[in-house]
Amino acid sequence: MENAPQKPGSGRVTIREVALHASVNASTVSRALNPATRHLIGDEVVRRVLASAKALGYRQNKLASALRHGQSRVIGICLPDIENPVFPPIICGIEEELTADGYGVLIANTTGTAKDQERVLEQMLARRVDGLVLATAARHDPLVRRCMLDGMPVVLVNRAEEGGQVPEVVNDDFLSMKLAVDHLVKLGHRHIAHLAGPAHLATGFSRIQGFQMATQQHQLSGAAIVESAEFTREAGREACNQLLKRHKNVTAIVAGNDLIALGCYDTFNAQHIKCPGDISLIGHNDMPLLDMLHPPLTTLRIQHREMGRQAARLLMGMLTTPSAAALRIMLPPELIVRGSTAAPHK
Image 1 (cartoon, rainbow, N blue to C red):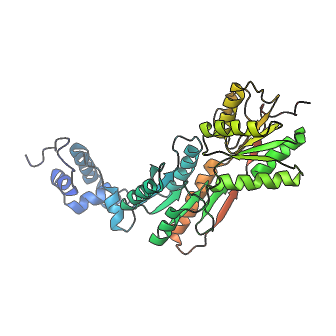
Image 2: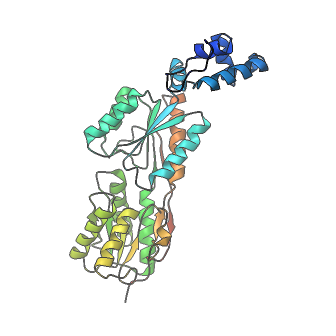
Image 3: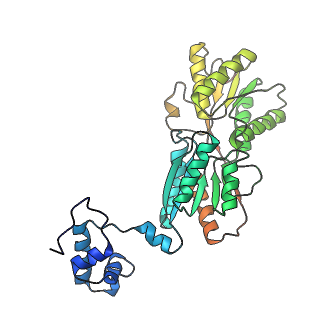
């Protein structure tokens, strides 16, 4: 009865139990289960070991094996809002690169207070991740400093932190704003406003700066800026209401992201404002299905998937060369012109 298969749910099956079931020693089981060493033993023994492992429901503990060699082969990814369509392509890009190097990912949604974010980071560290990709960074971020103090390799993606102490992959937000304002000025707009994202985040702050520079280059005096509380549709709706109360001559709006732009659509519908007949609108990110809106949204397309790939490459470089200098990679955006922008109403 010693070789009888273990019943499901009766506990984790060990290599020694597989060895007993297959009538071989434990070292032979280890070699048979490892494709890199399987050739060292005979085919008949390999088949017997694999059959025993399947019969007993054995699963290799890859984490324990990796930790014996000082690595978990797992990378942590922290997101600020997992429901935001911006982040899935970033994750896909990260996974594409990491999978090729034999790494897995652990994803956490870090919405909430600074204390909540600290708790998530502790959970990541407790699971012995080899490095972190943070899409959560604020301009002055205590989590980044914590990682640096702990010696944890970390790369920022989509959002940067001031100081440039860790590698980061971001969009060229200054170019984004230049492309948007140039497009609107070419159409004939002079009264252009920016519905910004939160200025405590680098994406919000740098797009504000980029908008100011672009409007100054075109000598547009008094360009309006209203800051949204968050990069959300609801916050965009509220900010758009504030903007239209304060600045009734606005003919075009550059939104901090596509979700804020969706909030503008809500306000336009509620106030019977025609887009682009009364006000032109530009988003930022090029989320899926924007071409299905009425009108389809003109926006800035950001290379989110490539951001993820580049971030993963930077992190792999840090793991192999810990003393490597911090790099900042800025990817150029592309203006996607659709139906929400047109010449101002004469």
